[in-house]
Amino acid sequence: MRRFMRKYGWSYAFVLPSMTTFTIFVLIPVLWAFIISFQDYSIVRGGKWADPIFENYVDAFTQQRGIFLIAIRNTLYYSFFTVIANIFLGLALASLIQPLANWLRTFYRSAYYLPAVTSAIVIGMTWSYIFNAQWGFANWLIGLFGFPPVRWLSDPNLALSSVTLSAVLTMPATAVVLFSAAMGSVPREYYEAAELDGAGPVKRWWNITLPLIKSTTLYLTVLYTIASFEVFERIYVMAPSGVGNSTQTIVMQIYQNAFHQFKFGVASAQAFVLFVMVASLAVVQFRSLRSDVEY
Image (cartoon, rainbow, N blue to C red; front, top):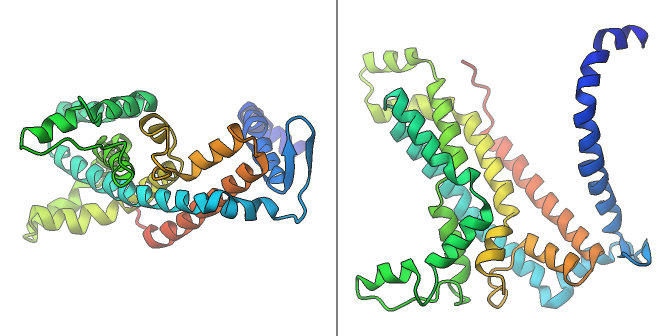
């Protein structure tokens, strides 16, 4: 042990502050929330084990006429379209700016990354103004073509699609930057060899670029999937009323159960259902998109 500490002790000493912060503010709260998910918990009287032990998990799906199932369906809908759109838009934009000069690539990367450093609340408020039924830009725009005003965020049949559209139309900042960086790291010799063999730009992009940035595609797919399943700020700002539960999502349900109704056990159970869903999807994505390519 003394030999090990002499050799590696300073390394662990440098990691210790970060690990201590992670343990106190992430690991312990997560473990405590897992325990609470099996308890009838109250801030005043503390927690006692539920009877039966899985009561909170049953209540999570059955309370309020199965609204949690509606939230899961809405979350899956939102995630499906936003993840696909972010990946394809990011890939397309990165492919378009890659042939440009270095200073232009830097400019476009910075411009496209701007939404990532802008507050999600501000972006949500901006889109709520755009989709305002009375004086919003969206209704003004479609009015130019003779269409009547649309209740984007107050119609239960349109509210979730409007929120999803706002997420799709917000530039996928991280995808553009990472795809552009990944494309720039592909050796030029591959493209030169393919060009000598007569391959055109589309074939070079399809047969060289896409396979060699597969690891980046996997990372971004998992990243955007997690982010879409955890959507909260955009929904909370754009449709705080829920529009007849048409915009309820899993995290909105967790928030309402925990901080509106003080059902901490049910909220914790729903949080771990969310964890299982995201982890399961991540496993599927890793199995389908993993790559052993090295260059």
